[in-house]
Amino acid sequence: MAKILGGIATSHIPAIGVAMDKGLEQTPYWKDFFDAYPPVREWLYAQEPDIAVIFYNDHGLEFFHDRKPTFAIGAAAQYENADEGWGIAEIPPVTGETELSWHIVNQLIEDEFDITVCQEMKVDHGLTVPLTLMWPGHKYGHIKVIPIAINCERHPMPKPSRCFDFGKAIGDAIRSYSGNQKVVIFGTGGLSHQLDGQRAGFINKPFDLYCMDKIVNEPEALTKFTNFDLVEQAGSQGVELNMWLAMRGALQGTLTELHRSYHLPISNTGAGLQLLATSDAAMLI
Image (cartoon, rainbow, N blue to C red; front, side, top):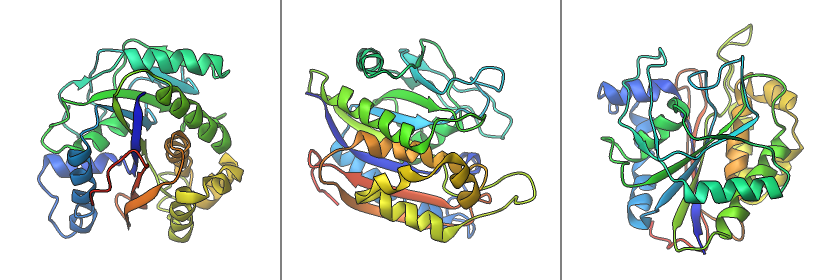
């Protein structure tokens, strides 16, 4: 059966991509942020996953306010990026994965999750920034990617508890898939940030650290929040915690937190990084 090696939670701020394009990683503003990533990259290089399932939210490149699916999954052989207007250079095509993706889709329907299936879609910085962070120099072509978009932009949005259960169903589907593929799950976005309105620039470090603590062994505590709770506690874009919860839902059994970092502010955001390994992963760092 396919094995899930672990989960990685990471920010996907578009300014990160701009900084990497311009070679700013070791400048004073960025150094502490980027210095947190080599241990996670080393773990990925050692584990050699075949497939990355990436929970992210589309910021208007593929799905705008006129059509915003609650949950969407890619089932294409390749995904392309395009200019979003953030100044990030477009990245080379991302290799897709179709067989496991369709297996997940079928299992989700059996589990009563209605999902939009995309056999053609463009992926934005929510997905491309994590890829370039983990495999700098666009060295991600070897890994197959299943993009899963969760609506975090237009109300009504799926609840934290629903996103956690959604991740659980996807994790069960992966583990039921015949084959020896090694899979890593990404939860991207957040943590606390508000980019607009009277609270623009709002960051809640204590709440962010609470979420990082609870997501390891007590994720159910986070599912008790409503999206309005998240907006109040973490800003209007703080609902991106839902991608972290979907990632965590996909993991089961005893987890080992191998790495953690939290840095602020990065583009008016509390930027978190977390690596959780399952018992199927070798503890190499």
